[in-house]
Amino acid sequence: MTDTDRRAPDAAPHGLHVVEHRPNAAGAPLVVLVQGSLDRGASFARVTRRLRDLDVVSYDRRGYHRSRDDTPPVVGLGGHVADLLAVVGGRRAALVGHSLGGDVVLAAAEAEPASVTAVGVYEPPLPWLDWWPRRPDPAEPDTGAFAESFFRRMAGDEAWDRLPARTRAERRAEGPALLAELSTLRAGGPPFDLAAIGVPIVVGRGSRSRWHHRRAADAIVEVHTDAQLVEIEGAAHGAHRSHPDAFADLVRLVVDAGRDT
Image 1 (cartoon, rainbow, N blue to C red):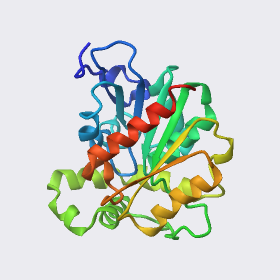
Image 2: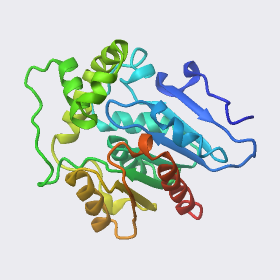
Image 3: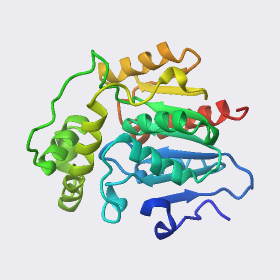
């Protein structure tokens, strides 16, 4: 096996597009990287290249990119958790989630702790908390416009304008999955119990991130008092793209935290 070996998409669980990079050495720790909203597994490419000694899996979550056409959008965080655990496939893995991917890995750690060695989250949204900014979902949404508005808000107008026309169309086509997962995450109370998660947690945030993303990291550490807090200097919400060295270091902290579990 080499670090370019891949699991074919048609062999992946639940019809998801999964990519697994295996190192030459046997017995390397397994880590699964989970994308946020309106993102894709390939966004971790620069991070993965810095983790060649680990068994690294990334995948396009249901409703996104190469998993969009073969899988219907999931309504609810539970569907994404089921997909992630299917990707893990009964193995023991460290789970690292960016943004909403952080909510997925936290819920997975609560649901199936025997499969999870440790969890890393980077600025997961916590919209059930009173101080989280409220943005009501449209009653009769144009899902394409909703996706574009979300992208512009998170990455900026210039980033959207730089996208090729085909990529803009793809992002707009991901609007149903985006709206479904955000709506269900905002409905009711918390989808997991932080205090009940019994595996190590590493929490990342950027020094230039928005106030609510930074506060979310504090909120997790306040509840899970053994969690490690890591701040990436100069980074904002997209640290996995802009600061791959530091994000890879965060991943290694998660793997190391889980070695004795």
